[in-house]
Length: 252
Ligand SMILES: N[C@@H](CCC(=O)N[C@@H](CS)C(=O)NCC(=O)O)C(=O)O
Image 1 (spheres, rainbow, N blue to C red):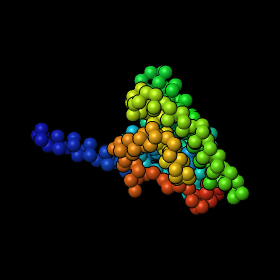
Image 2 (image 1 turned 90 degrees about the horizontal axis):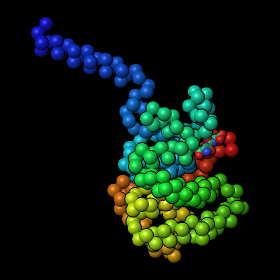
Image 3 (image 1 turned 120 degrees about the horizontal axis):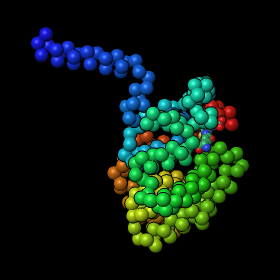
Image 4 (image 1 turned 90 degrees about the vertical axis):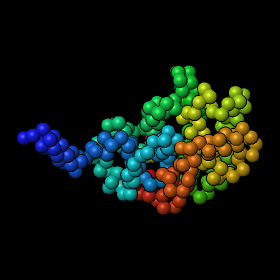
């Protein structure tokens, strides 16, 4: 065989092996490098993960749970460590626990401060905002007679407990971002929370000029701008169908 023929032979064998591998290998998606998000087709606990990945400029794939059987199959497969979603397949891991998933993403994409102290500050900000987000997450499941009271609590907590903290931080250091003058997970969480509260209380930022400026700057960051555009993986506010699906799948 001439050298040219030999190289052609080797190349076609490699192509054949690659095709075999591509057609048969279930793990391909994990190896493709794109994280895979397994959750319902709605915000819930996955939405903050979508926000963080999108803000980091990372593309991801999604699998939507539609039925209880699908959820139970994941449990049977051993994919869900604590029999709960969100599940994120990333870097060969099957990650559960929202907080752990987000810390990993923040660390991996350099959104988690430059040292332990910055990281601690980011954690405190993120946890505070998560407490507010938890109220918003549960709101669609409020009984009809508790809706008004729960809405009032969200407004009260956002206005008197959480937003004043970030207004003060931004005013005191005069920088664009919350921690270390650098875009971080805390900024992404705050931006998500501002928009989520505004959906319920449109004028909530009226007494917070720094947060208004922050919101405008965040909205113009290219990755966030893209995520806010129609057709992005960002999910709409929960509707009756979403609530019904959650109740059906998780037996709440
Ligand atoms: N601490 C967990 C809580 C996860 C969780 O409660 N997931 C819900 C869906 S949003 C679930 O899977 N519920 C089913 C169950 O707990 O049996 C996290 O933050 O990821």
